[in-house]
Image 1 (tube, rainbow over the protein chains, first blue to last red):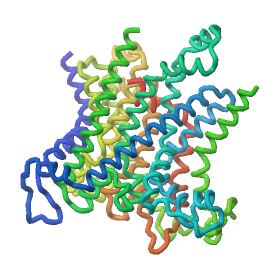
Image 2 (image 1 turned 90 degrees about the vertical axis):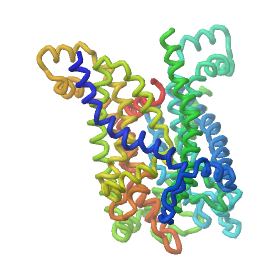
Image 3 (image 1 turned 135 degrees about the vertical axis):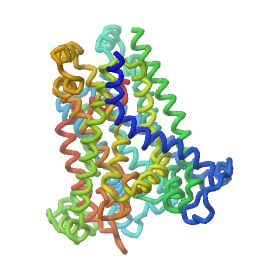
Image 4 (image 1 turned 180 degrees about the vertical axis):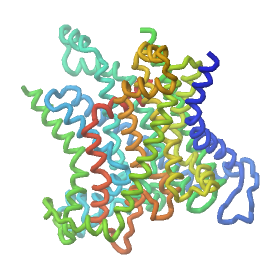
Length: 295
Length: 271
């Protein structure tokens, strides 16, 4: 049996190497660097241990704090709307008989489009001269046309709309899988008892879709906390830092300004936030699996 | 009766929601320069291919497409080979810690890119692999392995053990039994995993942006995101490049939608 164990390790080795070199080592290295002052544009300063200084600076950096608030607003607004819209789409997909396969394929399209492409697409739709949105709201009256992505009050709303459009289908598909797991006899039993459509939804669908809903919530939250492509393409964090989400700020500090130590502190902060949700997700998977075994 | 009409209307609404924004961009790519700037906007374009020609000739679009095909294709191939080996070991040997490895992989797939990007950049810099295909491919293999291994283990588990045991008794080595018995039987699963990895690598932007700073090796998402515009944005060309970058994905998605949905759910739901 020992020899076969060695074979197994041999089969696993290539994956270990990639995971260790390009995922595990880098995350540890980011933690380490967050305690150093390292600025690529000022190489003569060297790499100096500064303890918690980067984190102290981060807490006192008004741009970082605004960035945190922006990220939380982005996640807090888009996720509930995505789940609500996604549930609506899933309910329709679950009920449709004719052309269900076709409709499901169509729903996959926003998911399949590269984020960079959908971001350019929305940037064009929001364009201040030829944008469809302006034409829909103001017709041919060019003098009233707005530039939503350049307007401090509208930019965040505009990119949230683009995000919701792109990611709702994924939520819908997870929720559809949840809906399809609800046994038909439960609905039949409810019908025999004289339940209305609303009562069936309220007392059969809602309680039984909860696990899928929680799963979609956690999965989407983790993904939404790391929003980057959309902001990079549409606003570059502007106007006036109004869409400067955390991952974009971390990118800017590390790669545009070369502030590796400070950027690492931002990276660790983003990582820690998403870790909370990841642990909740793993815990949820484990407990739902145990429940499945108990049945 | 009323119910089916309502469902039909809702279905049409959903289809319009999903299709109209992108269709608008596709139509934009087929306009002439004069049609592009017309107010009110022209709904049906003259199916002019000028923007495609200019995107290919003036902006070197073909180059970005070739780079994307090379990077996403190679990354998919290597990820699936490495992932199959790992998934095979995890489903066919009685290892105590497979679930722990699967959980570590899942946790890794949830890392925000910025958490690893700086050190990954430094490693590639030391290897002299920045601005090379192998540099981005290596990063993509690491990024997509968790997804691939999760999907592949789900599918490999479904191949009955007895079939493989018969092969082993007949004198097949472990490696032979993997590629002669498991791979053919789990082919749909491998195809699904390959598709999802390919789509991921084709669409990935963050690492492509930081690793490929030289335009001659940049992939399509980087090219589309950094489309040069001096005074006005070349929207027609951007729309043309976007359409060309997306059509292959939509075709793949429509053909393999059943498998993709199943793969997405295997990655997210089943656990």
